[in-house]
Amino acid sequence: MLKRSGMVLTFGVVLGVACGRGQQAASSVLQAAGAGEDRPTIAAPIVPVGGGTSSPLPFVSPGASFAPGSVCEPTGWCWYDPLPSGTWWQGIAGVGRDEAWIGGMSENVLHFARGRWTAVTSPLTDTEAIWAFAPNDVWFGGIATPGSGGIAHWDGQSITLALDVGPGEINALWASAPDDLYAVGFGVVEHWDGTAWTVVPGVTGSSVSGSGPNDVWIGASDGVSHFDGSAWARVPALEGQFVESVAVRGPNDVWVLGVHAGLQNVNRFDGTTWSTTLEIPTSSPINLQSLGIGIGNEVWLVGTAFRTPEQRGYLARFDGSSWIVGPDAPTPLFRVRALPGIGDIAVGQNGGILLLSATTPPTFTDLRSGPAQDLLGVWGSSPTDMWAVGRAGTVLHYDGHAVSTIASGVTVDLTDVWGTGPNDVWIVGQGGTALHFDGTGLQPVGTGTTADLFAVFTVAPGDVWMGGGAATLIHVHNGATEPATLTGLTGAATILDLHGLAANDLWLSGGPSQTGASPAEPGFVAHFDGTTWAPVVPVSENSGGFPVHRIWELAPNDVWALTQPLFRNLVGYFHFDGTTWTSLAQPDSAQTFMFPLPGAALNSFVFGPHDRWIVGTLGTWERSTQ
Image (cartoon, rainbow, N blue to C red; front, side, top):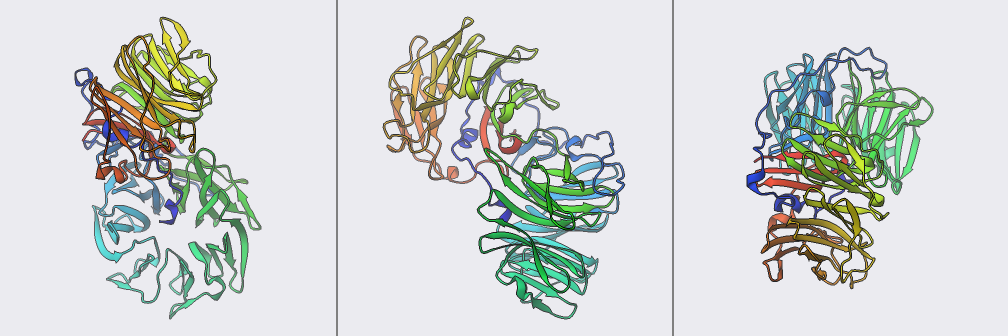
């Protein structure tokens, strides 16, 4: 899919989910709540929200309508943040003035009706387009089975597969009437006449729109085709364009988003001629995705804004003469559609659901819950006392009922969290930042360094270790904060992880400070016996110096470590048997995406094989109890 081209995947870290970084003794683990079981939707207060130029009926934000962990994927992973789900939403449609559907990279489809949201199971594994005629007549297009496109239908009771279209996928749906519906994919175009689906010969595409049965436009990878009621014809002016999206406001008002000759462009047809309204180089940090027509006949343009260090959403509105760009959205955006009675809604990555406002510049209201910052660390004393930290000072806490944001008092990136109990939690981050939670609030702790800190670990109250860049290692003990040194490290090294079983049995791991560092600074591990740190032991797949990103100890003779890949999608496993380190072959399963899409995992914590937590990109926080 084109819209997935900006996905950032982190492989080495993900394997911590499977292997169990942070695993604690089973006897100390409280009984986990059944996150994977079916739970009723928790009704939220109905609150009015505005959008576009409509006068919307009462509408409940999806982000306020589901309990944490109540929407679960077939993989067994359940969403805690964002709510209702971190799925990449791609399809959206409204029914009347008080009903809506949202679908994406999940078998769960969200349905809003009678003032509440529910999650409905679909036979499609990926819903890319939705078209609704009535409460009991809704069509869905996407992927039915791997490599095979599908069309499904809602009859008011359930969603069933109506057609398997074969290789490819259904990217878009558009209709002029219930007996004139088009389902468009790169491999095929199907037409529904109210009775049966038939193939439209000689036409394929990825986007479709029109103003009526005699004015249908389909965009494809090599231009645009137009149907005038009797025959399909190519549009000469757009030959060679890789068309991402088509939106029609009227018979003589057609908008096309395409890519050609190194430029992303938006072209407009006035019934006689084509004109270019926008050009953006493909090398720019903006990746345009889709056009949409709003309730007030506005033309919207959405996409991805690649910002450092995260991706954001791009939003613009045509004001009649030029494109007016709005502020960055929390997440990349894929689609924008008008929902009568609700407003203009844009959907996108990691659960992104935005209510748009046609102001100048355009603005939006985020309808999901939780931050959109990358979450970089996770830890918990029990399944009802979980912590997650991330960029821009983000701190989240889950108490068994709800996820809440905790004021950190800082704006730097927070990278790791660990503790000994509900009233003893430590957090570290950029610039030597350290915070401590004593049960009442977070307080800053002096570290004596400005180096970025990436790891924190404690096995007893008041006995804390922190590690980071420039070979920084800090020990907080008996109220004093002291630097520690490691034999065999230079200032080019970075300590990335800390773990152990007791104050006299700790391990750390790390690697070079950056890709391409000297081969003399490979990935490494070191052990602490309660008195001194032993000289570091180089651990690497080769002399290129893969950092050892994760280390965890199950027993003194059972220690595991893995590298974070720098140049290829492989990791190195290493095991310590109490005497020597051994390099192990990578399991076949590790060569695939081991985290549930769409959020790339950046850290993990497990209580055991049946209670695993991961955090990741754009606020992803999930749990599996399978």
